[in-house]
Amino acid sequence: MNTVLRVRDLRVDFGGHAVLRGVNFDLSAGETVGLVGESGSGKSTLARAVLRLLQPAQGSVNFYGLDLLTCPAAALRARRRDLQIVFQDPLASLDPRMTVGQAIAEPVEIFEPGLNGGARLQLVNAMLERVGLSAGMAGRYPHELSGGQCQRVGIARAMILSPKLLVCDEVVSSLDVSIQGQIVNLLLDLQREAGMAVLFISHNLAVVRHLSHRVLVIYLGKLVEIAPCDALFAAPVHPYTRALLAAVPRLPHAARAPAPAGPVVPPEPALQERLMASGCAFRDRCPYVLPVCETNEPPLVEVAAGHWAACHRSQETLIPLSFAS
Image (cartoon, rainbow, N blue to C red):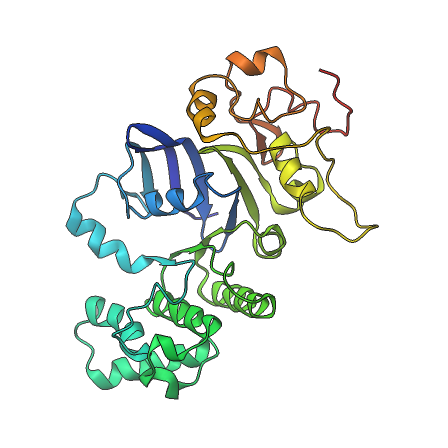
């Protein structure tokens, strides 16, 4: 497959504290990779670091042969048309002083300055209709639209330059459930048409399962499991992944991932730095902890074809065992 993005050893520090460490993954053209984890795990930070909307402390983000983290500002700016993001809050991501048409046309004005006003208007109207809005909405302001309509405008603005990479950061979390399905299906259609790579960030596992080819699971700034979507939901390996899947409400007779033996509670903020210093970061929440988990950080290892997990008991968790530590 044609690799669009290659992230290696990515680290982000805030105030001297690491919030992302040793992040490695690839993303191919036409592929959707889901990124899941609880609040505060580093999902949005990873999205912004990949796009260099914040400056990582170390690592590389290779986009079609260009390292976005070390390239000159002019080279990065030239690549911005191929790197687009849709944000979580659809209303806050739009300038309230700009009409819908102006917001969608702005990227075209920047990257296609040779187009005249009529050509830009045609592009804007066509894009509005493609995302399910009427061309007549171009003259409205964001406050006159619903949340779902604002999110469609955000998608139109991101897609009007036909990007090669689209990052979706919790794009449906603030929308009604009925609208969520419409936005998800719109994204699927746009990706099939454009063949772009998508990094889809969400805490909604049902949406991630519907959209994604592969899934990355992040905990306290570390990737703890990477797997094809079907494999991850059918046979999760890392105890944290199992806890996430077990927390999803299900019908009484629906199949479910094996749940941890005991309650999984969030770590206190004061513990997070200690947990990341040595050993497995999940050890204080894990019902399957071993003495080695206290001192040795588990590396990501391939436990099945394309399925990676960072757990000292990864070979055991491939089959449903009642772990006796």
